[in-house]
Image 1 (cartoon, rainbow, N blue to C red):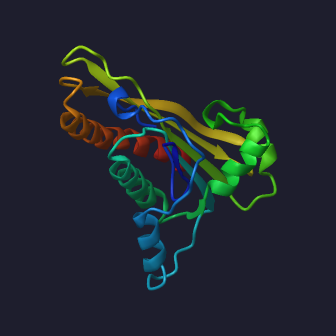
Image 2 (image 1 turned 60 degrees about the horizontal axis):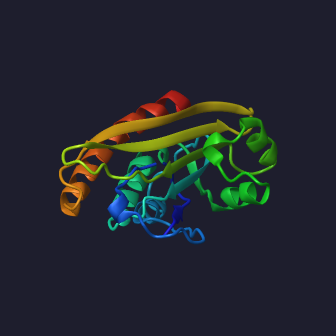
Image 3 (image 1 turned 135 degrees about the horizontal axis):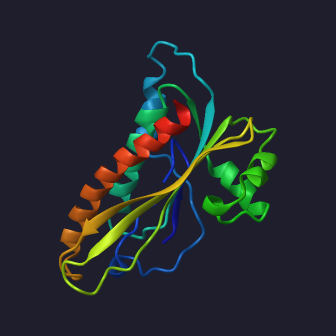
Length: 205
């Protein structure tokens, strides 16, 4: 089931074929716990001047049995890295608007086409990240790849700040050991998030 989370950030994971066979359905948008906790805590926290507004689109196409854990890791990390200095906006209206304009592959879309589309919208920046799928190799101990395309655009200044596919190798055991696949994938995801952090720093610092 194709799942799209458009909230406090964005990003792509390559999963295993044995866990990724379902056909995609219409996307849905939800707010992860990390986002809800951030909003709740803001009522009592001292006011901090924000540097701008970021629309965050996070697309999860992994179709893994543990998608919720993948989502939680991503959203918690991106909320922590961006939420303190920026106002984070739901990316669903931005995703909908791009799809209506015929932009279905955001990662490869022309930056000028995107900035022109949102020149009058509230967001100052757009962060896009997509979790994809990858077939597991059939040989034991063969590696799979965890991949996160990360795209960041300055909408007001019509400038691409970052556009790179970040990768991390996942060393697999046998294809039928799904519990091993989960633990290895989540461990590699944590390693990959450090590369995501570097990408965010490059764009916003």
